[in-house]
Length: 161
Image (cartoon, rainbow, N blue to C red; front, side, top):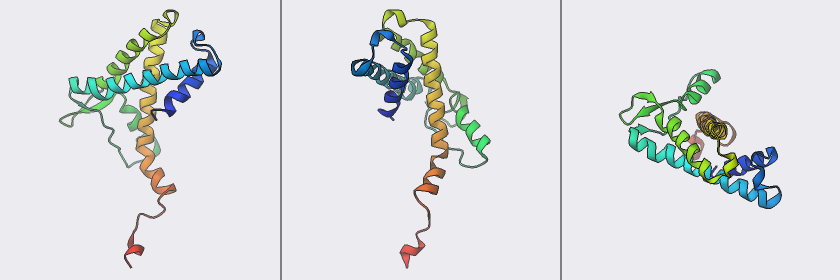
């Protein structure tokens, strides 16, 4: 994901001509890509290290693992705003919300000055939280997908005989 997500975001941004100063073609894509990669890296650093250390939050995703599609999906998405403390209690996810916001503000410093505005920063902030919420949904259902499509049988009894 550390290459795929920035590559995808760079392609979408280039197609939208989100930062016209970057241009088009291979050089333009390269500019979009390194900005997207740096955005994702700084967001991960803030959300997964700096803010959890300060706020004593456990930023790991814990799967619910049972229940229907709606229940598990809502639980996964809710983890973008609710997390556990180091002691195991639910709390507001300062690491995700504030960390993503800090990262978005920081990223505006290395974009062209014309692109540095509250709207672009807010869009980046929402995108970062949205990507993380989507990744929580994938993490929630990945064990089921993995079991169904890649490991047809969890039983190893046949190997014992």
